Amino acid sequence: MNLQLWKILFFVFVILSLAGEAKSQERLKVLDNYHLYIDHDGSINPLQAGQLFEEGDFSHITTDNIHVDIADSVIWLALKVDPLLEKQYLTLGNQMEVWSAATYVKDSTGQLLKTYEKKHLAPLDSKGASYSTTVVELSGSSSYYLIRIRSTFNRNYRFMIGGIEPTIEHLVFKESIPKAFIAFMLCVILYNTFLFLSTGNRVFIPYLVYLIVLTYGVCFHSGYIPFSHKSMWPQQWSYTIWLSLLYSSGTFFAIRYLNLKNMAPRLYKWLLFLVFVLVIIVPIIDNTKWINVSIWAALVPTLVFILNSSLLYAGIYVWKKGVKHARFYVIGWLFILSGIGVYLIVTIGVIPYDRIYDFTLYFGSAMESVLFAFAIGDQMNQFARQKEKIEAKYITRTLEKNRLLAKQLFMNSHMLRAPISRILGLINLLRPFNTGKESSSFLHHIETSTHELDDMTKKMSNLLENEGYLNQYQRDFKEVKDGSYQDLKTDHKNTQS
Image 1: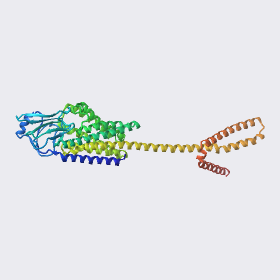
Image 2 (image 1 turned 90 degrees about the vertical axis):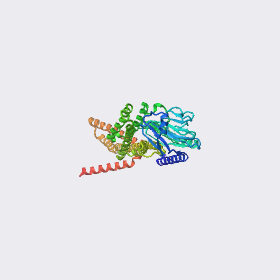
Image 3 (image 1 turned 120 degrees about the vertical axis):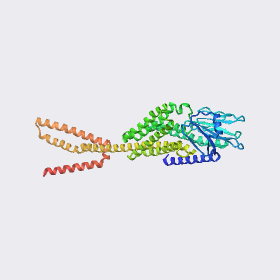
């Protein structure tokens, strides 16, 4: 499948995704009128939260999205629902934005009753929807709802509310994007595994590791958790391990594919240093809590962005030095870097949040994986073309050597045979005139040696004929013969003069 077709499929995928998201938002209302309280240390209980709301300490929110810093792990929402409306459902966010949530309703006695609770990575109860996005059921029977949301990430909230049908439609679409991404990436992984097994090219090893970890990591950080187990989440050593695999495999793939050790030794050392920092230094600081969590939340993405920018620069540098197969690598990194960049600047609140940004990592990663596959294929094709050129040169040199050997063999078998025949004739003429015993012995030895030479030239001639060289190099042999005779005539003239 050529690159143009991949581009067409990618843009069709983007257009359909945008259309699907726009359609779901038409039927769901974006919540832009509610009250918010940030519980910085997470110590407020429901009764205290209710009192704070009634005393007017909650902030009135009239925008359609809010950004919450990583240090503010708990927020409280207070909202009212029109009693005339049908049962409503509020989407709070995915598993990265909502680790746990609880809904409290004020009863007739003034007490706050818990009507819904979602615990981090716990099985969903009967009231929860079977999606990774947390959904809370609301009705107009209460004066107001209090919702407690907890998470430990930089996050953006865009709450949406509507009836059961548009809510399910929205969730189905939202879940379909990561599922399609996983299916697509599995196809890419299987295809490249087959290429690795058939070619044995070791550049596939870090690339396959990178693809596997990338597939999980993108889904994880975009809120779709295919392996919801506590060991895979932050503040666990296993979380550090798979992040380290992502950084190291992507870097070592670049080093091997671009041959940075030889093509750019300084860049090679710089990338190894960045990997060392992200794989060794960062986990140590993260687990020892030496740096404030807010500073750390901004520092780590910055280091990741520097690593990815350095990998992109390495590709451009090698491409400029004449390594043509680096072009696919550069284009691939541009896609993933764009996706990561948008994701990071939205996550830390630099630009306004929109649900479309949730899909940037999927789009960027999918295109990157395809272009990296093209990059390896292009490299293999270039190696194949270089091998063909070397083989063609070798064949040409071999044929030239065969031609020279055939010429030499022709000279030995045909050009040398003529003077040998003359010597034999002269010996026959001299024999009657040399009756002495010693002269006869000399003539006998000369005759024997000459017959041996004659036998050898006959064997060479038969070899030329049997191997087909007489016909194959007939023109060359004629040139050799004519040239040799001409040289003999010239030497004979020079001798006479």
